[in-house]
Image (cartoon, rainbow, N blue to C red; front, side):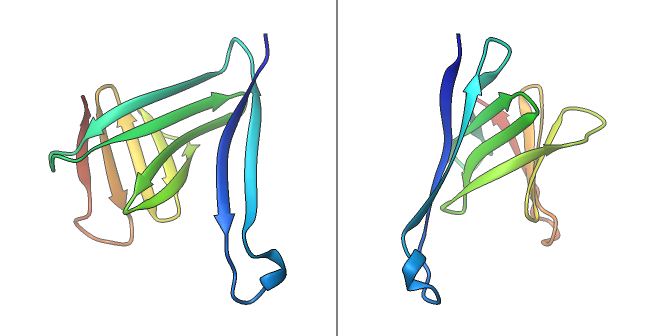
Length: 116
């Protein structure tokens, strides 16, 4: 049985191009029995829990989360161990019940997180 999963809707506003202001972009995947979507709650020790939604659909492996009040899409990249996802300069690396979030452009920014 195929299910359609709507992954992301992003609204854009633009000062330079008013004709495309409020444009919406959506991605959708048809999921079958081998694909999965899972939500995991993490705490990085600061008392603010947050949810990461993992999407595994065919060749697409993504982690969706909010970072600094901004919705981010992280794409899975090659890792020696665990699952490593990248969104710009941000790296989300999970293994078992532990994960880290790091801004590769900011020294000392690594946050260690654990599932709840």
